[in-house]
Length: 119
Image (cartoon, rainbow, N blue to C red; front, side):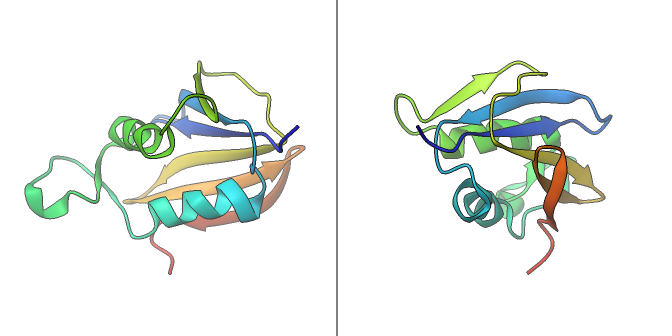
C-alpha cells in the first residue's frame, strides 16, 4: 500500500474546487516536491497572452492545469468532489496575492508552507 495524498484546490473565495487524490508517494519528498516543481515561479493572473503561458488565468485554470500535469495514465491520480479526504498527507492550494500558496498537512498538523513565488 502506498502513501496516499489529497491535493485540495480552493478558489479565490476559499471554496474547494476539487480534490486530486494520489495513490502513492504522497509524502513531502514525493508528491510535495513534485507540486513545488510544478508551481515554482508561476502566478495567478486575470487575462492572458502568449507571453505569460506559464501562469494561470485564475484558480480554476490552475486546477485544470494541475490535473492535466499529473494525470498521465490509468490509476495513480483520481479526481474527487470537494470534501473528499482519504490521504495520509493533505496539500491545501490557495491563492496568495498573485502567488499560489501550498500548505502541507498530516493529521491536521502543518508540516510545511510555501509559495510559488519563493525560490
